[in-house]
Length: 554
Image (tube, rainbow, N blue to C red; front, side, top):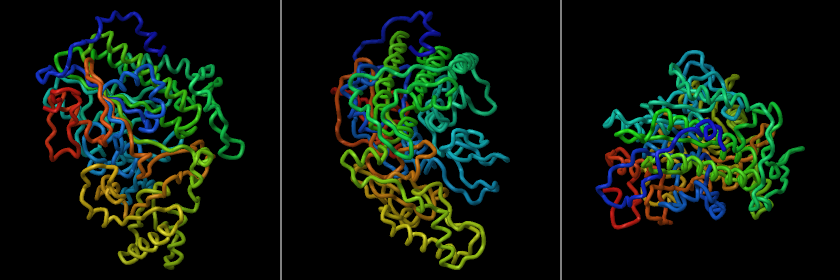
């Protein structure tokens, strides 16, 4: 039982969910849209654990199921992925090219820009996204260049509520958008909101409840029977291993809270508070509640995707979602649920090498902007201590220093591309000009070329001078000393493929195996709630989720 389940046990529910058949085209729109993103919930994880689901994920698996959904762009990271879900446009068009990018024109010393910050504010700095605590930055949605479905709904129906809550600020902000009634994300030991806003008393009470228990020891989770075979220790560094941990939390270990199923429980608790306090779905207008569940991602990074830890997480996620849907049912709310993910993920190479992928490997620690840039500068006899090349990591966007002359910048770019492209772990290096000259791709996303996938992530004002794409199975984490053992971010389908699941009481279950895209979600939900997104303002298309002779897109 989650915290809020206990706190709200005294609520008298108003009956069961509406069981009418919703196949008629004249059916009134649902009163509540629940849009859920499970961070790093790949199509592979959904398929792998589907037969074990008995709770919320089982319910969704008996709705409209699209098992081959795609985050179609190349930069398969959290912020870009979330930017596609409720906007209906590719991440590049949304202006969200990555979690972080480089802006050499900003005044501050730290030139790295976080997708969900406002770097225009003096004295701010984001710092390192993988660090337990980032720098002093102000969370903001201003980098998102397009409206979300919630933004569009409120424009035509101001009485509608657009609410978002997530484990990460970038998830809440990218799904909620610019015009949110309430928005919260996890920060420290509780939920925070936008600067200048007041935290709702009920959320403040939840924060106090969490803070009173988060540092206390908790016993290990029970290991479900179907997880027992995954209880195998895998070494990934000197004295370190994964694969045999059941999330026991020692006294005072709040720092590991995010990397356990407890974290999703807190986010669902917060969603329940917002549901009850705002009476979402109980007014005349349709409301939207966006929920970003992040524990799967932290567990994937910290323990990999194929061990005991992820198996327990899938079981707990299924259970927690089931409890939440039961609360919605008990309130008698006519609601529709959509669940997808911001990206997929890949297991740690040490376990993959034991499971049929002998070529899996960690990135060469010398494949980075600093090392490559220094070698290029020496070869071109460019003097000075300032770096000539910038990037947020070994893959993705690389930027050439703007302090150089135009001739030097071209020489640096050409030399760096040649050096990086020759590396055995690099699949391709794409010049920004060739990406920009590529048409925005259409058609089946699994058939897109790598250049087309990079084009979907491209924005002319934010993308780098060239883009580095690594080979399949290369984990862009050189050392696990900082706690991350696995990741995502590649242009390959293990990072791009995610499930798209829709459920509404009375829906006729069906499964459509052909590929769809996350940019199809906003037009699909928009058709259900009366928000028409012009064709030239979306990269997606409405999916008919009726499952019968009626068409939910009409």
